[in-house]
Image 1 (cartoon, rainbow, N blue to C red):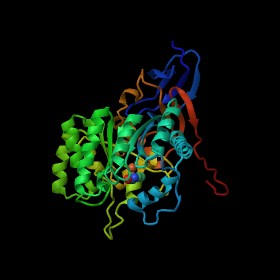
Image 2: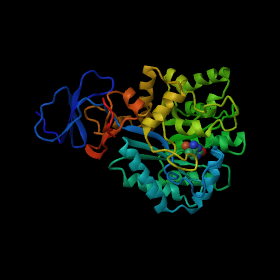
Image 3: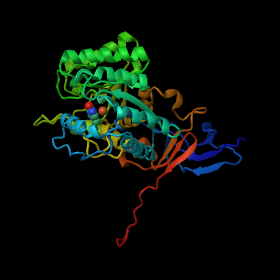
Image 4: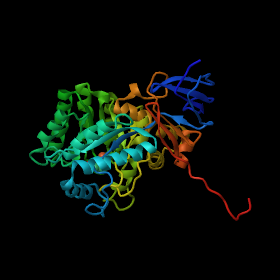
Length: 418
Ligand code: 17E
Ligand code: FE2
């Protein structure tokens, strides 16, 4: 008999027949079995609901979150107007401003079941306020949520003279990853050079790579091949992530097929941000309009790692958003034609396990004995049910502690005969 601090009774697990009990002790999963005999501890009656590892937010900008309308709303809906609005807003960033909005956003994410987050921090301002603030937040929240910070040169590494030095300073300050935006550099050559520079920094400082790559509908935007080639040649492989890659959806199939072989060899990760890119992309199209989301289905079918992100919560690029990963997965199901049963399950995996692979946190992640007790209870009986109904995450357990609880909405019918 064991004496855990907490026992979850009758949990339905992913890919597992029959319900199990889960015992938690010292912040770690102590036992998983159909009926655990325990002595003491807090009991949580899950009653056959889905218990899952937490969601992984593979891509968000915590520095710009919750600034919608400041100083103005994005009227064109394009990436480029968003960058211009942010350039204005970021002139008035303070540490307190960024920390307050980032922490509020992390709480939104966590209460909806996300406990691992990769955030980009804009490092195109000489003060590096966004980065400093997010590094402080990473530390301040680490007891309840894991945050990685990627140094992201929003205005390009070569867009203005000081930016190259700023991204190196960001490495010295302790960013977890190095990013870039090759499709926004002034020329194709600058874009290629920026990718090489990013890989040099990643190797020199031993950091992860996560590049905003080809986030444009231009079928000539082909930096993904450069990223994949660098990942292959440097041996960085799955420590590298290509985010967005929306142009991949615009490439002709002959080129896309050739590229797919290189991607497979490179073993890089992909992050799709379907809520954002379905709205940002296709803006220069008339009809038919592109969906502007990378080839999620084909990448997944080839066994490549694809995960998902919100990208934004109410910022210059996206006026909406609540930070809910099930909403992101639902948009992936719809916009990427992932409606088959296995495909819906795959979209759930993209919001969970695949994200852990992108973030390279698999050693801390998953419902297994000995792993940190990070888990969520959903008001759903399967991933399909969870995505279809955008189910409430009723309990969030982080490091073995109950962090947040939410009541599902309940309707009472009045005045209608059953
Ligand atoms: N910056 C960028 O280049 N692309 C985006 N989707 C966001 C910020 C949100
Ligand atoms: Fe982004």
